[in-house]
Length: 143
Image 1 (cartoon, rainbow, N blue to C red):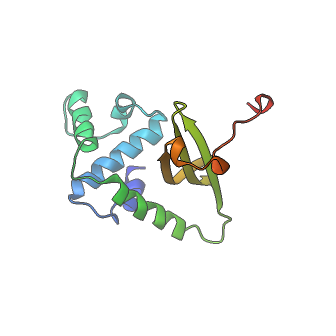
Image 2 (image 1 turned 45 degrees about the vertical axis):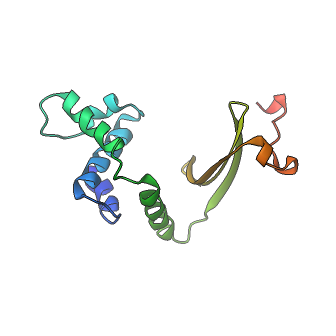
């Protein structure tokens, strides 16, 4: 699985090829463990480190690295995936949600295998959103 993920990441712009390898291991760990927890990924990440803490520190350093710009990587990856979509029907979803009864989250996603893959997200404060476009809440019968 690691090799398949790495093949998609190598075409992205990286300041260091080691960053692509670390991200490929992180994605592999996420997929195989089916959990969004660093400690759950560790058994799936191959490393020369003797202790699990060393591998976890490596992953945390990658996540906190100021030289890595997720926005600049995400766009090319999604563009490549959409370009290879072929003749399949592309379903796009618009989702609006209220966060903490303080902000509106507007998200446009592609639906793929029962999941929403976000393309664009934007957060707005209620006073900056015209009343005519504010999301309405669902009737209690639909919750």
